[in-house]
Length: 189
Image (cartoon, rainbow, N blue to C red; front, side):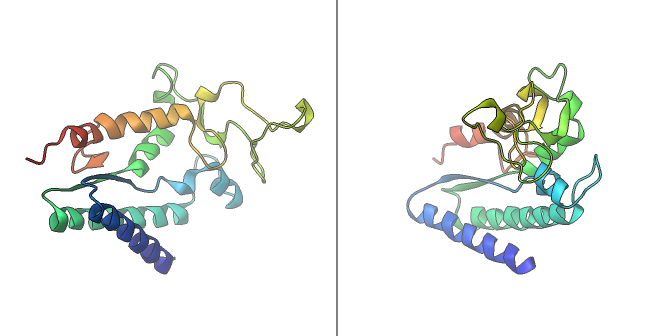
């Protein structure tokens, strides 16, 4: 896994440096979320309710630490006329999953479900699709705003709105060296 981590990170850094060479000066790179908590990983690893796969999350955490370090190095070596921003989706999603009842559409009722998918069910193949008739349509929850996960792999729109809000206007806990709104308004002169 370590070799995969190094290889993927190397390829990403090459691409970000190419963007810089082509003239990009404000770049946002989003780290991995807590992949060990997505419904697919919880199901195939037979993770008990309320828990996540520690091994998968350890991989995501290691990747994110190295990514944040590499972006910091790019800021040092390619700045001051460029900013490479690290957005910490892992931290944000972990907060949402852990405290799901405090989040949600209007932050009044929170999410009801932080483990299972709204669409596709709880067992493989986790497909979320609409068939030709009602008998071939996958399971769909009654209220998609009550779920952290849309399907076995992806966050719901409601969860993504919270993530976007934190990245756009949050402090350096969520994005570094600044948030996305600050990056947008940053003047290099």
